[in-house]
Length: 135
Image (cartoon, rainbow, N blue to C red; front, side, top):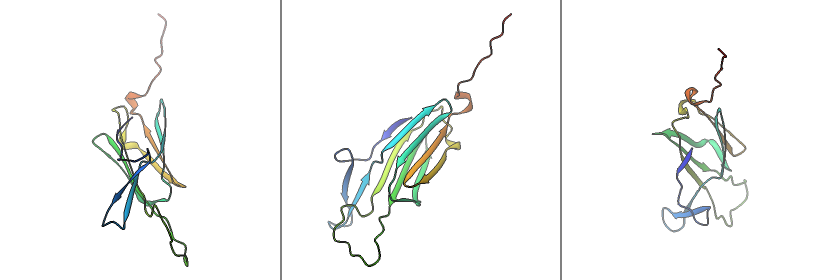
């Protein structure tokens, strides 16, 4: 699994893009990921703090895996916002899936702001033991 594209970022973390005039800023973050590979496939954990399932989009297209999400920072009732550097961060990351992986069997779950993707290897790409007989 090779990363094919990274969102433009500043200081290895993020870049602020001005949208809808100078008063609103949209921040696109490259989420930190951990990737573990074994003979069965790959497990990827992506840190997406503040993201809910309805604001998460995970897609596979043309051999690439795309993760996009919007975080929601709730404002407690009765409080007034004095200063915010990040109001609704946008997360984006893309990876290239090798031919050994079965994109049709990806399992995804989101818990406590951590996305877990399990990407199994195709059966024919998994290592198998060959029994050797003696003649």
